[in-house]
Every structure is written in structure tokens, then in C-alpha cells.
Image (cartoon, rainbow, N blue to C red; front, side, top):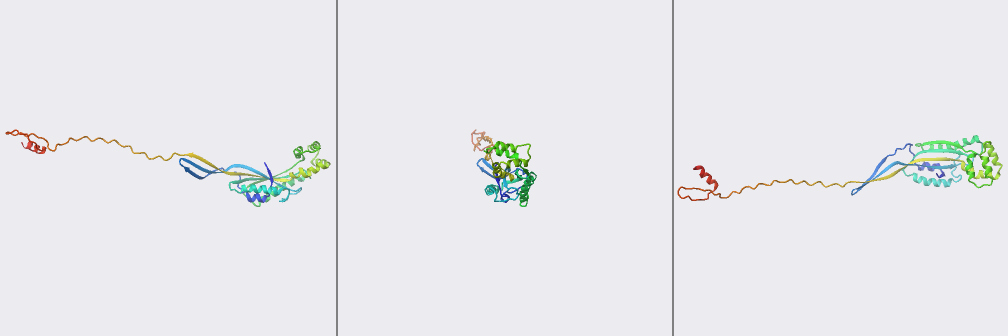
Length: 273
């Protein structure tokens, strides 16, 4: 993780703070349908968790914050870039952890106190500006053995001797410093290069970030209403046609002539016979 020295005020103005334990939920923000395709967009809160760390540098034996000290100008520029992203309301700070550090030179009994003061001054400054966050502080006083990895990575003539002094189990912290001071070039290297970065307070910011996700699915287009099924119609039975002039046989006693008379008239005559 890349570290930066920061201006506390810039951080406080830039980042919205929320309580820890943020719940992850989602909110439908749009729904668009084109034909049988539907696209839904959701805002998923606290979808991603991350953290970033900045460092505040301090002069030797000091717990005063100085914006112009060391490379703080470069660090403030880096913080502004972070603040530009953090200004988005989709980012939510969940916790801030401050750890103060002190280099191993000087009196061992006072180094932890100095480290604690560096952490506390940062915590106090934040507490006067913002309330809704979880903030913890701690302190760590470096020992001379903590310098060994740095020395191992450097190109110095008496590296083995220096490492032996730093890792000695028979010397106290004060005795190790006295031995290093007997090596003028080595001691100057410690004063100018190795020890200054150890005088700092680390500010770790944990945060969550909302994300927008899309859900696409297909729906069936509306179907037309079914047409009514035609019912079979029974064919009407043909009715016998009635002749306009039905034929009736009328017998007479005298002539036996066949004549055509209407059926009704024929019935009437038969009835009267």
C-alpha cells in the first residue's frame, strides 16, 4: 500500500463519514424496456470495501503538526486527488485508525510517550471537526533492530558491523546508539536517511463504495386475444313445398270429371258430404 503524508484538514473536508457496520442493500434507479428486452439498473450500497493510508511526518522530538515540514506539500497534492474521488457520495468512510511512531534514538523511556502524543494530536484534531466515525489510536516506539531491514538494503562499507550492533542482545538500546555514534559516517547516515521516516503518524482510512449494476432479462411480448371458435350451425331441414293449387279429385255422379280445386276448399267439401 502506498503511503502519503497528509494535511488533516483536507481529509476532513473531503470525505463523508458514516458509522461502521454499513449494511449492503440495493435500490432500483432505472428500468428501460425495448421490445422484449428489459434493463434494470441498481445502486448497490457498500458493494466494495477498501482502505488507504497516509502519513504525517514530524520533526525530531516533536509532536507538532507542520504542513510545510518534510515532503508534506507533495503529500497534500496526493490527498487532493484522493479527496476529489472521496467527495462522491457513493464513498462512505467506516473507520479511521491513527498510529503514532517514534524513532529509536533518544531516551527509550520517552519514545513511546512521544509516539503516543503524535497519535493523539491527530486524533484530537479530527475529533474537533467530525463525530460520526469510529476512531482508534495506538502508538509504537521503534527499536534499533527495526533498522536492520533498511541497512540490509543499503550499500555501505561496514554493513556487517552495523547489523551486528543493531541486533546485539547484550547491549541496551542506549548502548547500541552509543556504539553507532562511534562510527561518524554511519551515524550521519542514520540521522539524515534512516531515522527521519520513522518519526510519523500513520492514518488508515477504511471505506466502502457503492456500485451501479445492471440486470438484463427477456420478457414475452403481449399475445393477442384468441379469436372465438365458430360453433357449427345445424342445417335446417327442407320443408316440403306446398303447391299453390293442390290437386283434389272430385267425383260427380253424372260426369266423372276431374277438376283442380284448392286444398282448403276440397277439405270443406269432404266435410260436408
